[in-house]
Every structure is written in C-alpha cells, then in structure tokens.
Length: 96
Image (cartoon, rainbow, N blue to C red; front, side):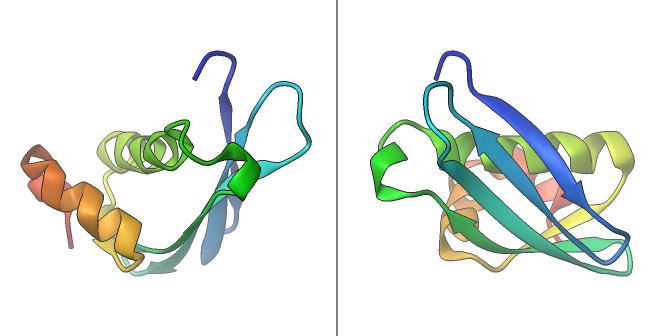
C-alpha cells in the first residue's frame, strides 16, 4: 500500500508495530512480548476499514526484518503470524 509507514513502539519486555495509513487516524497493530531472545508475536489487529490492503502482511514483514537485523527469534502465536510463517519457509531461520 502506497504511503503506508510502520513505526515501532515498546520496551525491553513488550511492544507493538503500528501501520499508519495516509488519510485516516486508524492504525494496524502487531503486538509482541519479549521472552529472552524471542519475541512472541501475540496479536495482529487491523481495523475493518483498513482490511484487505495487505497491512497485516507489512506488519509481519517489519517484525521479520527486525529479527534478522537485531538477531532475535520470533515465536508465532497469533494465527495470522503462524500462517505467514507457514507460507514463508525462508523465515525458518528466525522462528523460535
């Protein structure tokens, strides 16, 4: 989606990725909890008004990019993230 920006929010223990869409104050979110060197991706939430635009996929992509760049593993907990990891076997190296 053109113009979509992803921001990161959180602490050493928990956080969220936010997807900001131009022209609306609604945001998509992916929440995570830190457990050692693993971020458990707990929830992916996209408001109905923003559904069907690939926003959830972009949130997961941001998490995967950060895992590779920062050296942590991802434990898919949220059903959307579980399915995304099943569809992307090349992410197996970062899956906890």
